[in-house]
Image 1 (tube, helix red, strand yellow):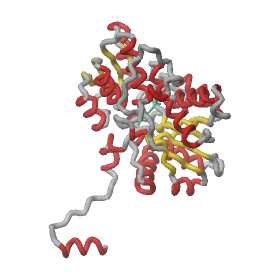
Image 2: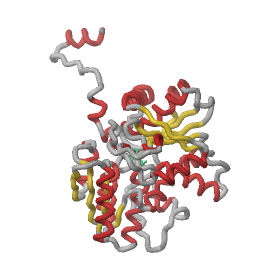
Image 3: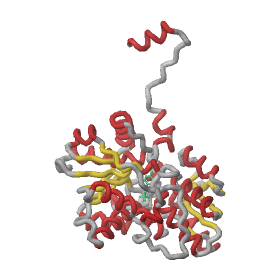
Image 4: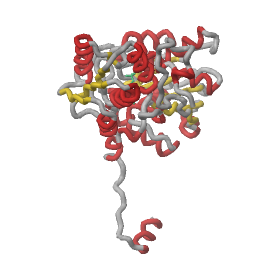
Amino acid sequence: MAGLLERYKNYFPITEKTPLKTLGEGGTPLVKLHKIGKELGIELYGKYEGANPTGSFKDRGMVLAMAKAAEEGAKAVICASTGNTSASAAAYAARFGLKCYVLLPAGKVALGKLSQALVYGAKVISIRGNFDRALELAKGASEEMGLAIVNSVNPYRLWGQRSGAWEICEELGFPPDWMVLPVGNAGNITAYWAGFVQYKNKGKIKSVPKMVGIQAEGASPLVSGKSCPNPETVATAIRIGRPVNGKKATWAVRVSGGFFSSVSDEEILQAQKELASKEGVFAEPASCAPLAGLKRAKRDGKLPKDIAVVMVLTGNGLKDPQAILSRQEEICEIDGDEAQLREVLMR
Ligand SMILES: *Cc1c(COP(=O)(O)O)cnc(C)c1O
């Protein structure tokens, strides 16, 4: 399949000089979640972004941000990251032949993501501090040293991420009633909204879905309306206290008629287990906040019946095996012995 830049050339700010490279990003599966949808009384889909080349939706924005950085003559890029941005930036920097610096909050990055940044050849710098501090440092360094910043403050990142909304409209043939996303820096929810608006303005769809943003209770500045100085959650991808796109996202959610809500770590991990064991879909903890949010909305009587809902399953479950392993029942170990095996199978 052609890459995103090629496929959506007419919808992106692309010129003859933009290098249209690709790692095969986008075109991810829209999986119908029959069982869980039935339990919730809705038509439910998961947009499985873990199928992107580096295992998260970040690739949709990164391919455009990197192409524009290359077009503008940048030699190096920089980003702060809770993990997935660094994996994606490192891969696309390698693809486009740019140098890549990533700043990570020390000790708070899932193992899969960290190993990606390293193997793709980025210069990894661990910051004793949280993501919000790392982003301030990255912004300062980008201005001082003329490095292209590829966080979601980069407008091309968000523009590239609109493509997820377009694919959903094309596949369903209509926009869903609700679009539910996990919210960290609030870039993706803003990007999806802008994507639906762009399609509506082009006459390709008639309405924009209600945008619903789910945060973790320990990192929920957009629910409380106050920044959160010490964000904490098992869903490290959304462990962010001061979302850089918070204002835009708040606007998007409000005009679409949607809302923000928060869920506990326990609810997130339960949703993760449910998605994997009932539907065969393994997504990382942050990606499962939307399902936890829908279950809560159902319990609170806020989920209308029979609506079409799409959740963005933002990252691959394999990114963060530690989050889930600690919660599984112990693995049964036996000798290489038929009788023992028979005994276990009959239990
Ligand atoms: C980046 C990320 C998010 C949060 O997206 P924002 O645009 O920062 O709101 C959610 N889930 C995963 C897996 C991510 O990598």
